[in-house]
Length: 89
Image 1: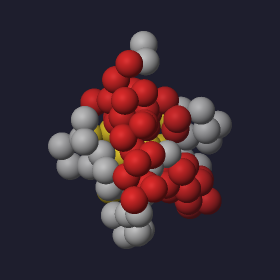
Image 2 (image 1 turned 180 degrees about the vertical axis):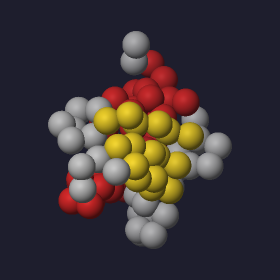
Image 3 (image 1 turned 180 degrees about the horizontal axis):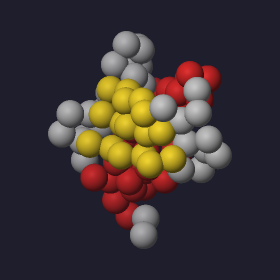
Image 4 (image 1 turned 90 degrees about the vertical axis):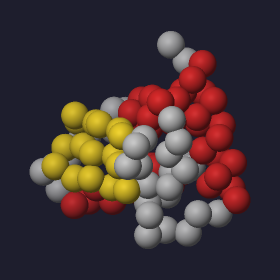
């Protein structure tokens, strides 16, 4: 099933690159598309449990869903993730 999650703290291509690289590590997730313009993360997954797993992974790397609390820690993690995405090859 195709799922889209709107996230917070998604600012640029570096963020998108980090999100994509982290989500493709999950076995049940494929066809990841990240759009910084509308802060969306879209992907194919087998079931709703996989979508929940993606939300948890996004939260862990600093990109909570729009309906989750955006803490200072989440914002800090997103800056680190963004920088990592910009410098990784």
